[in-house]
Image (cartoon, rainbow, N blue to C red):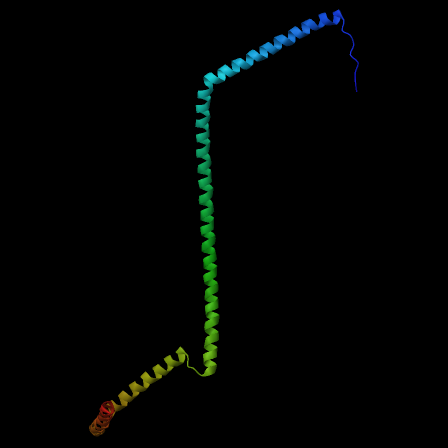
Length: 169
């Protein structure tokens, strides 16, 4: 859209003079304010920079402390979780071990292999029989014992001779 420009009259020009003067004056003030701010920033720039560095250092320390605290909390949580998991796992291993032992025991029992309990019972019976034999032999220690000694010695000697004969052959 094109607008037609109208001719400006002298009355319009005189009315625009105070307006343009005001704009020029405002622009001048803005420019001077900018120059003043620039000069002030140059003067206090070092001070402001140092203040910002100090504030940044303080914030960094606080942030690091908070991060270290969170890391230690996370580490403690992980350690607790690892402990819980290992205790659960060891419980499961114990269960698995018991199941395995029961199945092996059943398989050995089916094959006729005596268990540790069976062997312990047999050992106890043998010890009891040995005690009974010792008691009986102590009761009949009279003449039977005198005859039994040479027979035992005679029986023991040929066995020794046979063993030595085998070694020499």
